[in-house]
Image 1 (cartoon, rainbow, N blue to C red):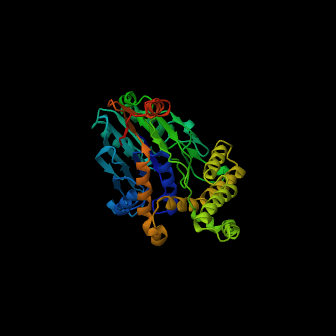
Image 2: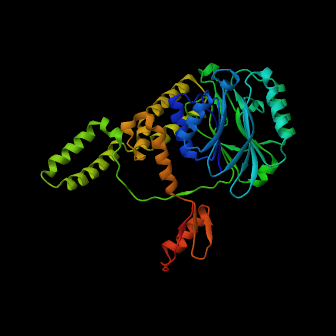
Image 3: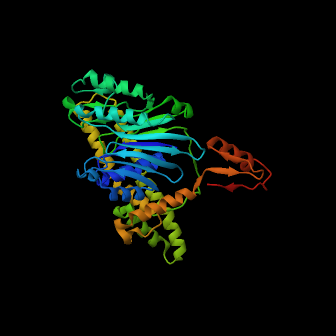
Length: 415
């Protein structure tokens, strides 16, 4: 069960929401913690449902009469049982009960940014620690670095704040988990001379939690639409197998913006003469598919290519040239958002053109529901033996489906 943590710069920004959709689609977390949502509770509920999460809890400054600044939210899927124990403008603390009966605790945190207020976080963590003695995972934007090596550029931070952070982590039995990816999770997006980057976002856990999940991995993902990087904690490294049903032609809405599409259709109509409509449509389908592959050879891989280039720049010295190149690539990435939105609307099989943006919740629900049907999680053979996990499912299918002559075996897809 993956846990996702992200300091997103406001759910009221459509580009931020689009980036968040893409991130959640790629990482498929069951538990999502967001900070700086900058939305009142009703809108948090709306976004949660729109992004495919069944339940959740949120806290905004609006609840304390402070407008829409800040805000935290915790969302989860129906596959996991979550009981929120306490929450505030700076944390959501919850007990997590997984299907296999494992019980652990997750605390999403959003630390105070001003140095004079940082003691509030240490006091909060101490209070929460006194209330629990089991497996505990804590993650989010702490707004504090553990040591001087977690900051590049700018003025040095006083040792006192870092020592306090290390001290309170030790008192709570929380240890920094090993991560993969670019080390710094936040930067100020300034020019080279004033450029600063720090590791403010992290996951920490107790020994008990690490004993339950010894293969846990923390991933620092690509930064997108935010000055913070999203983080994913994958405790078990499990993955579902997406069942592929074969090739199916789909007309992509963004094609109509290109003259080549109209020319291809016109060419087929002129070549086929008075042949039957079915034959024309079949040839048009093949021609359009060929044209799209030639015109958009890397349509689905362009975002990945751009993000790869951005990752390369992240590791270079932050000169003005490097930072300008990064901004250019980010602009190219933003230009792909519209086509991606059209792509997912097309995949929903919904009449979205008629409903427009009002239909957003519907077509995402449609696409998500179809994805659930196309996901293979468990198999059971005629003897009643169950197969779960990627390796077991592959072994089962190879043994009984691909090379066996005993074709009478029956399997049931159990979700």
